[in-house]
Image (cartoon, rainbow, N blue to C red):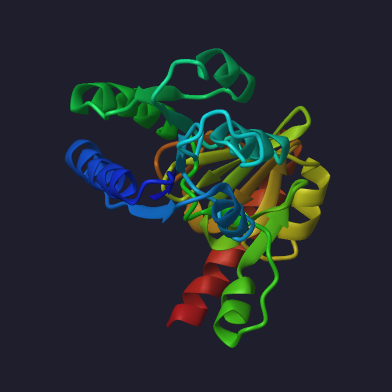
Length: 268
């Protein structure tokens, strides 16, 4: 899990990082990577190349709350929302003046300085519940090009959808379902990501790989995550039942059998 902390005071940045690490280790038993920034500019430069699961933002980023030249935490939040980044944002402030403005960027919470452990934990409980419904950024990242050999090797497994483009590891996609103007991807660990994109584009680009197959209208399955077939449905690892078009059951099951046989032969 990746957390960005944008705060102009070094001691408070460190305190927030420690509190975040302790909270998520104690309540979720997961490790976190806390990346800290002293100003808006350095954060934005990092954000261009990486996404974050959670953002803690100092509202003013300056001791002078009347300064008009420096970017504020609200400016950062607006930038992210304009680019369709919906990561939870928690504002940190010495004043409640930002509370109303926070509705504009769908802030997940506010923490008043000096930080109070009880208030911090209560806010993080709400944020954690929100994070449980989102896909970790280990599966998603902003689309970027790179020239080094290792990244090029990794890139062979990457596919990008949406605008702005969101890149994901196609090996981790268990299935994808069309939902109006969106496609909802479900990954190997059960997490989901809903991306505004055209299903026909997703189908066209994934079915060039033999493990992906359209089983019904608006339904795409990764054969690697099928555990069985029951009542004309694929049963996915984890128990999800995926429909198969009645008129195409024989063809679909044959494709699955052929893929499974080929994979087993290659593994021998």
